[in-house]
Image 1 (spheres, one colour):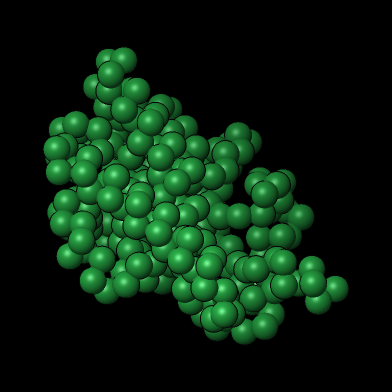
Image 2 (cartoon, one colour):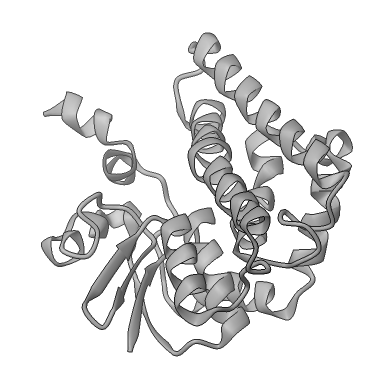
Length: 228
């Protein structure tokens, strides 16, 4: 049976949504990153990068949320676009846009907005600008397209949903006033029963919620390195 290593963060939620949409049997394995469980030797065998999500598909290890979505989509044939060069070109392009742009810039924007020392104005402004720029690209695209890839709900919409639902935390409570087409798709995906079930998976386990000094050392490795 497929093993799904996860917590309640945006990237694991993408994969959780796929698993809930498909009903694919899996064993849930919580990884509490505030306790440093992502650095345990047994988990590093699954993902040497020490991050969630990751899967163990009967000895086939896949890590990175977008790689997992692509792997599972291709394996099951579910939530993939029509089998045409144009559709697959769009799928790969937008999936990589989220993987290399929206996700990383959103993550850094969150860090410098909520967790970094407040005197780092340059870094804060840099990542806020880039996160907004990526949301503008998404909004312009979705103003002309029902889903991320044409008229078909795919793994790219799941990848989009993982981060888009966090947009107010990343960019502020008024973010959807600026990007109404993003909100339209976010609302549609969030209304799917599988989305509610995906979010609720974390509630089956107890995760540490405090971002204390120990947690900061595990979440922000440069702090632990400096202290050493």
